[in-house]
Image (cartoon, rainbow, N blue to C red; front, side, top):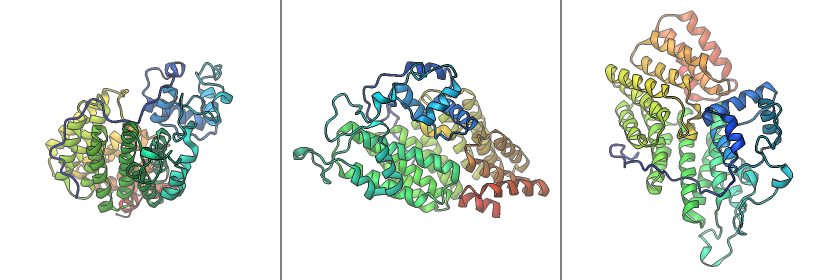
Length: 427
């Protein structure tokens, strides 16, 4: 059963996060970003990569790792993209260290034998994405015995924390491109591996907080894959798991995210009143986060629930609030998981709300705008918006236009496996 969203705890201004390490910030690279948000800059990096035929999975979290100095020398593909974006600047001017000085070196100033923190944690990341629990367990380094040994006889450190958070990022990027259906089973194995790390390895408080945050975000990601592939009951269970993890860890940011997704699921599952309660709970938790864009998204979640209740006035007020908050612009405090939320998603969610209210012409206009604005990187979203457009054009009696939109959406389903979008097109 999903925990009741009626009485969320007040949000702490400082939510639990992954453990910090003393890195030298890359101030040169930070200056190149200017006043763009990390998410906007990451989108610019992806566009630049396409211009020169490269493929990079850049998001706000990766930009943050570069700027913090956690990644001192990006791989060759990223270096080519950055040199294309900033011609005339060498690696030193970009703030990057020479590759020979970082390759294979430990990052920690005094790394213990049980805490291998090699740059980018490639082995751990591959283990999460290809082998699930068994492969992940084989990458853990044995603890040194005595009181430091956990139930598995192994100790988790910052490398494992980064691996969990990297798994979240990889799953979200794969979902954006290909949809949920082909990812769900493997992602579930990854989640179980993360919880095994949290529950069965020994670790300090900072690592525990980072593992809890990562495991909770993984639970939300797997829940979304279940949602998008039509497994609504399973999705609800995963979101409840994320909520429980957030509350045990005292992580208000994670709890707000879990309520956000719970609201979306409840709307799609025909429980609009629960959707409104969950969205309101998330807004209470997020009010101290300093992110207008997050509050905008949560207002859209509320609008979707109120539309399902037939509360037109309440829906219109929530939509107006969402647009006003979005207009405040991006902020450093915007959560990394919100990289999908731009003008296209704003229009797409508004289209869904108008459609639920029966305002199909208005919904079609918003869906068409969402298609026009969407970054090509988000293939699944383009298919979703085209499907939404087709449904509302058909409901408005514009059958030829509806069939054209349906055909465009179907053409994208060769690359996107989403039971939810296919069901919309079947309808």
